[in-house]
Image (cartoon, rainbow, N blue to C red; front, side, top):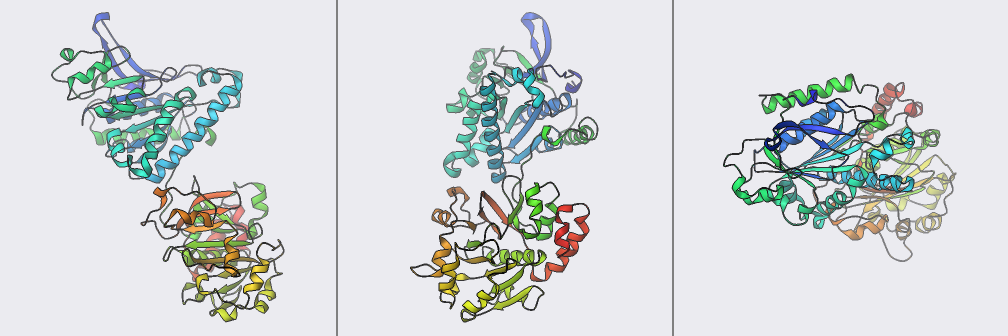
Length: 550
């Protein structure tokens, strides 16, 4: 049976996704069985290992993608098993396939889905619509239809085993809440798993159930069958529906194909659909994507992302902008504007990447035409900037940081002071001067970046660094305890305190931006290479071309 030939979508049709053949002997007929999204809440597909659960998800996703463009159906997948649904990422209707090992990706996906559910609920209630199908048939849909959203979660038992103790089970709670609240907004879950889906809180969250091969014949009472009516042998893909107690056979994408052949067909179909049917589909109609933060990214790579798609206000300030790395929900560049944030604290544990971030900031500042003054009490990479064009001074001892030095540049709006290892700079001659200036700097004054160890950052009455801590924003790298969040006024969950965070991973609070962050890597000798890279991409990305001129 080839599902894609069964149905053709029309602009007015309710979304109906064929995925099986149903046998109804009392009515002496066989017919196509479909997922009817207009009436579906959530759906469970329950069975033992190798009973056809993952095949069912692949078939439904493939059928939906070849039958409907992304304008009608978006699909997001969480693979709690062995990666069987990973090939679905190739389909144009599929925005995300997150493996159970990709915790951050799953959390980001859930955050976006929760926000979308809230947005849709508000839209429908405001305009008085009972469902998205009703909305889409109205004149309001001229502003953009609301596609049905399917969240496929393969292997609930595998997913639950990993996340039941993660952050107090918060992810499982969030999924269950969205399952309860999402259907009315056109957000549906199709979940596979073993008989645990028929127990406890999960059992009441799906109005549609398909039971494949199970060990305990009494489980089939969920679909209205008595134990004595259950066949001794149930082949792969054979199941029974709760809606009508019908016996169904789930279709394969291609008859007699192996799993590898099916995966190749999915990928080939995805390429074909993207190149033909969906080639000119606007981005706003496509499913959103979610990625994990990269464990490593270079400053050159960040500049490659700085395309001309930014808002006009940011483009006007381009020459003042310094990139710190990438972060947020969409791994976008996290940018530091010294004119907007004249004092930037950077806190972190030892070996968390503080100095690496300072090197990146200095390189970005030099690319943007700043005059840089560095305090580097340790013999580290910061001292490698000695003698470089644009670096006015590299102070290596606390006694060199005097009021005369700071007064020389404080009225230069293109001057940037960089203090590394502030825990070693507690007693400096300019302490009172810095205390007086913090909080009083104007846009035409110089700007300051202070970096130091979280636990040893200078504190105490009358100390300049204590005044820095009152800023309550900045960057926090590899935090070790929840109290650290107060340094930059953010909220951190206990699950985010991980000892195996990559260097440069942390959180940023810069003005209205509060986001996770992966700091960009660069070396003191990278400035000319980065400038050449910017020149090479400036014709494609005009918003960064101004940097190449400095």
